[in-house]
Length: 230
Length: 409
Image (cartoon, rainbow over all chains, first blue to last red):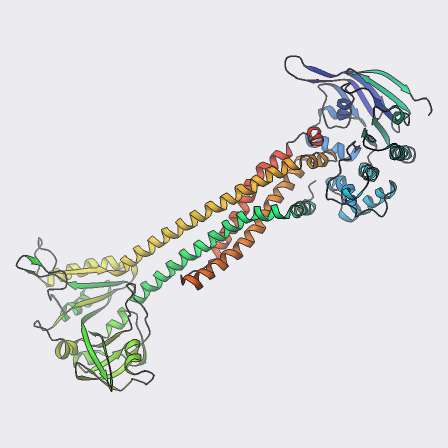
C-alpha cells in the first residue's frame, strides 16, 4: 500500500462571491522511499496541496490516506499527533525558535511526544550529527549561517524518525553552493534512511535532484513524470 | 501528553528573554499584593490597639452616674445630683444576678506630699471590688480589704505615675504620704495600666477606701453618697441583662414612679468601644478593597503583556504546532508564563508588604499586624489573577491556525 494516497482532493476558499478553487480534484499516490518534487508557478495550488499533505490544513472534499489512516476526518489535536510522529517539515525561512540553542530546537518534536529528557538530548545530538552539525549543539540560531540553520531544521524534521519530510522551497534563501549541500543531504537521508521526501520548488536544477517531478497549474496536476537522470 | 516540567522550563526561559518587560509586568502584582498586605496590617493593628484599650478599661464594664439636678428651670447635667449611695452599690451586687462586681467610687483631686516632693493626682475612694472591676492587680504590697473600708483606715494604693513622681526609685510600701495634709500609709502599688481610650494616664491615681474618702477627704453634704458606681457584668453576653436589672433595681430603690425619668444614668463603655472596633473593621475591609483594585489592575497588566507576547510570538506558536504541539500544550505554556509572573510577583509583593508594614510602624508609629491569613489570601489571590488574566491570551494562542502562524511576519 502507498504511503500517501490522495483521492479527488478539492480545496475551495470561500472568497467573496466567487469561491476560489485552489485544488481541483487532485489524485496522487506516493510510495515509501520516493523523492518527489512538486513544481508550478505561484498560485498553482502547490503550497495548498503541501499544507494538506502535511496535515496543516484539511481538504474541502476528497480523501487522504496517510500510512493507511484517513487523516481528512481527524481533529486538530489528532492532526498534531500525526505531524509529530509521521511528518518532518523544512521551510524556506528555516523557522527555528530564536534565542534557542540548536539542540533545543531539534528537541522540540520530542518534547511534544513526551520523550524523557535524557533520551531527548541523546536523539537530538544524534540528529545534529547526521546533518553534519556535531559540536554545534549549544549555538543559538542567530549564530549559525543560513545553511547551518537549514541543517538544524532538517535535524528537527528527522529527530522523531518521521517517515516523510515535506520541504517547502528549502533552498529558497540559500546560495547555489549551500543549496547543493542541502540537496545532497536530502539525497543521503532518502538513500540511507529510506525517508520519503516531498519537495516544493520552482527551480528546475533543484527539482533535478529528485526521482519524480509533479507539475501543478491552476489547481490541477498537469504532468507527473520520472526524472531523467535517476 | 503534556510534559509539565518542560512546559514550566519553556515558560521561564521565554520570561528571562524579556527581563525588563517581565519585571515591569510583575511590578503591577508586586504593588497590588504589597498594598493589600500593608493595608490589612494597618487595619488589623488599629483593631488590636482598640481591643487592648477595651481590656485596659476593664471588660464587661458598666458605669452608673447620678442623675441631674434642675435648679430654676436650668438642668445641670448628669452627675450633679447625688442620688447614688454605698447601699445602692451593695444592693446591686446582691440583687442583680448578671452582676459580678460593683464598686462605689467617691473621688476628687488632691495634692499629695511625700517628703520634699508633692504631686496633684486623682484620689479615688472605692472598695476592693474596684480592682476586680478594672482587672487591675496590685504589683507590690497588698490591696486594701473590706475591713479597711469598714473601719475607714487611712491606707492608700498608688498608681505607677504617682510612685515615680513621689518616690522616684525608692520603695513606697509602708511609707507615709500626706493627702490634703492627712497622713496615709502606702500599702500597695498598682500594676501599670497605660493610657485610657481617651488618652488619659490611668496610672496617675491613688486608691483609698471609699469610707475614708467620704469622711476625711471629700466630705459632702449628703453623707453616704458616692459619685459613681462601677459594675462588672458576669460575661459579655449578659451586659445588657445587667444594665436592665440595675435600672429596675435602682428605680425601685429610689422610688421612681412609672412615668418619671431615671435619676441616674447607666453607661455601657464596652459597647462604645465595640462600636469603635466595628468601625475599624469596616475601615480595614475598605483599605483591603482599595488595595485589591491595584491587584486587579496588575492582573490586567499581565493580560496585556501576554496578549502582546502571543502576537509577537505567533511564528513560534506556528512552529510549535507544526512539530506537534497540541491545543493544551500551547495553552499551558502561556498560562504557566502568566502564572509564573503573578506568583513571583506575589512572593516579592509579600516581602514588600511586610517591609512596608514594618516601615510604617517605625516611621509613623502606627501599630501594624501582618496576619498569616492576609499573606495567604493575597498570595492565592495573585495566583488566581494570573490564571484568570492569563487564560484568555493562552486560549487565543491555542486557536491560531498553524499555516497562518507560520507565515506571520
